[in-house]
Structure formats: C-alpha cells, structure tokens
Length: 354
Image (cartoon, rainbow, N blue to C red; front, side, top):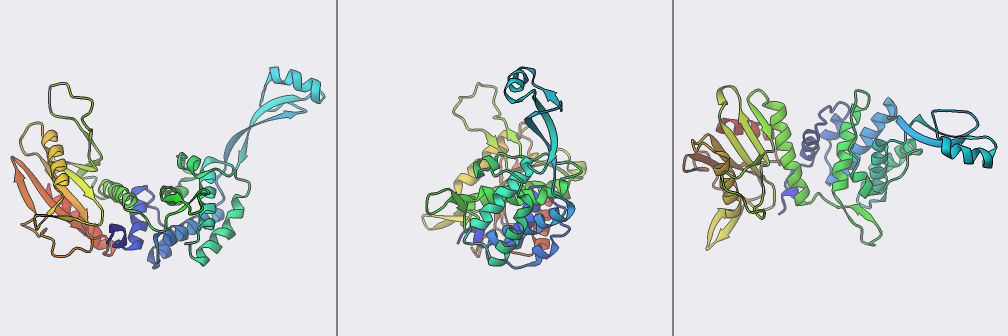
C-alpha cells in the first residue's frame, strides 16, 4: 500500500492550499466537500472552478512589449532600424511600445495546464467539459510547452492575488507530468506519486506551523552547519531540515527539528525485529547533534510519519521517545486519512513536545 493511497483526497486539496499559501478558499467550498475518485479529478475540478471564478472577475492583463513599423511615432523609436524601414515601406517608423494584453506568463501557465487536462484520458467527462467550455477565454494567450510553463513564477499583486490557488493547482499538476505512452510529449500521471506527495507533505507542515503557531514558534526549513572548526571535505552532504521549529515566549531557547516522512512503509524488518528505518534515525540524530552547539539538550528531534495502513505501531504515548545524550527524540504519526480538523489536532499536539 502506497502512502498516496491512504490520504483522503480532499485533504490533498487543503494541503495544497497551505503549501502554496493560497488559503483564500472562498468559492471553492463545494469542491472541498465533494468525493473524488482520483487526485487528477480533484485537480481538474479545482482548476475549472478557479478559472470560472477568474472569468467572472476578469482575466488578468498585463503590459507586454510590442515592436512594429508604424506610420506615426508611438513609444520608443528605433532610429537605426527606422532608417531602413522608411526606405522600404514608405516613411514608416519602427516603434517599441507597451500595450495591455491577456498574453501574460500567468495566463500562459494556466492555458498550458488546461490543454493538458483536455488531453488526459483519466479526467472525468464532466470536469473535462467544464475545462473545454472555459479555455476559449484564453484564446488570445500564447501556447507554451510544459517545460517552459514549469519555470513560470508569477508575481502576485493586489489585483491578481485571487489567482493563487489556481496557480498552485497548475504547478502541482505540472509536477506530476509523465511521458505519455506514445512517446509524443507528456501527460498527467494517473495518481500523485510518492515523491510528489512527500514534497507536498513537507511544505504543508511548514506552512501549517507558520500560519497557526506563529506566536509560539518560528517555522523554517533550515540548513544546519557541521559543528566543527576543521575544514570540511567537499564531498560531505549538506544538512537541510524539512521543518525546524524555534521556540518563542515560554518556549524560547528550544528547537525542534522535524524530519517529515510520507511513504508506503514506516517499519522495516531486520532479523525478525520490526523497527523504523535506521537511516532515518541516524540522519535525524546527526542533524540534532550538530544543531545543538551548546550540548545542553535545547534541540530535540522528531520523525513525523504520515500514517499508512500499518497497524499496531509501537508509537504510543510514553513509549515513542528516547534520549541520546542530552537530546530528546520521538517518533509520531499523522493520519492524513482522517477529516482535516483531526489532522490539525494531531499537528497542534506536536508543539507540546518542545
């Protein structure tokens, strides 16, 4: 059983909203309440709902730069090019000017993903019909390839910030592209793969703590330096945490490093003994030991697994932690298969470990 098969699909919708900081969900409530057969159906439904909302508000426009040979001056004149153009085309000027247009990078990203939805054989017929009905509103927007669309990072303003969730869906969908069976381009994966879900899980945790516990902790994905005065070999890996919580107020001076794990199997077996991955434990221990420069136990570590269908896990209160030197460690699970308010309660409880 894969981790992605145990997550309530509508929780992925909420995780996306957190991960991409697109938490204005007005107008999307009915999508979040529906049941979907696949993540792709969810993405398509939110895409259609978001694009329909933008059509009602008015499709975003921006200034684009155009260059033309004109009979009168407009914008900036290219004097050198105009001298040749005037001879060839009858006293015309080559001008470069700006004009409002829908052909912006943001709309190119949205159009690219919409066409990918239409080409997918896995999308529900109703959702595909909704997308097909809406795409003509982007008819004057240039078509870009998925590789180019992935590089688009829109800048949000007061005018276009309503696009945030729609763009989050597009970016997440593009991350799930796979070569199609014919080898002629790319198509959507049938499901979210484990690596993609793991990345989403990490970003979701980070943004959740930033939003709901900002007065108690600072949340960041920090880089930890090796705690040594000696020169380090170039081949040593960097230590980049998934989530580092730094205490404020009554928790000031304490740090919790969270290593987020989201894949199909939590326990491994060695000589008939079930255990968490030694690699996960050793990695977290290394992070904590190097972060605790004062060696005073002010830094703790937690392996936070997304719960799968495994049962009888030995992670019960009072039995899921251990000490290594002055530092505390613990293993916990988050059941992403539960309603989101229950997921949130599990995450809130983590703060109490600091």
